[in-house]
Length: 318
Image (cartoon, rainbow, N blue to C red; front, side, top):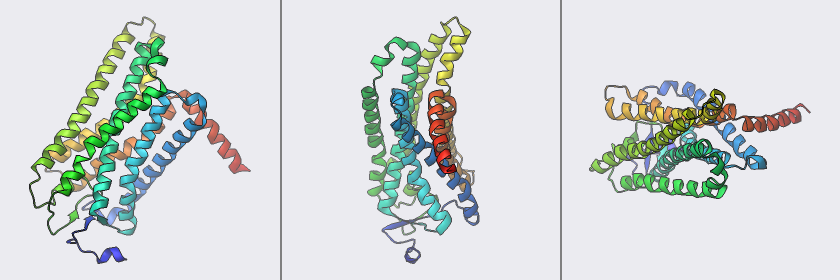
């Protein structure tokens, strides 16, 4: 193929190695990757379709779930599509522009994902602590505005990453020991001073996720205080059950992030492929499991999905 005629020193391209040390197993590794990706696309598109079709689901919680689905599709596709090209066809070449674009969409997606989780926590806080004001406080229009604010924040935080890299000179060897254009993996190929890149790459994720986690913790602190004031155990359980799906999704999202960050910055003795596998779990697990968790825990959504699934199965039977 024409791609193989390019050299690692080509100034207009980079080479993504995939998972260093496990190149011989790339085809086998692609099996869980493609499976997770397929499940993620199927689940997220199903949520978008069902919520779009059902007027009864045009509520703030389900609009937030649609935002989450769109973010997951964008974030996952920006990474997995190229990874599968590497695993299946050895198409390791990526242009500098393509690399920086992939980086922007991935990091913007992660920041947006975190913002949506914060908004979901606020949604649960209002629903439990101020149920009588829920319909007036959280209207669909207000949810759309909060989503727009989250999107603007994501762009503002993610855009400096490719811009900071675009000003750097790169050494002759353009090989990225990673399966996608991870910010520091690209920065380390530079012959210039990457101090600003290091500081921004370390501080911003912890500032964004740290602030968002503080807001989520505050919301749940107020929720727990309100629940404890309820004397009925049945009411306790009902109130907490409405938060279960969000708590599961939140833990699924933030736990791999912190493990990935800690191993990347402080685990110098860990072999490279462990770093990369952890980085992949950071985006692959949440995007795959989010819709499954919400589908299992949200009765109204589960029933609507079941209705359309049974229709599809009955059509297939004919």
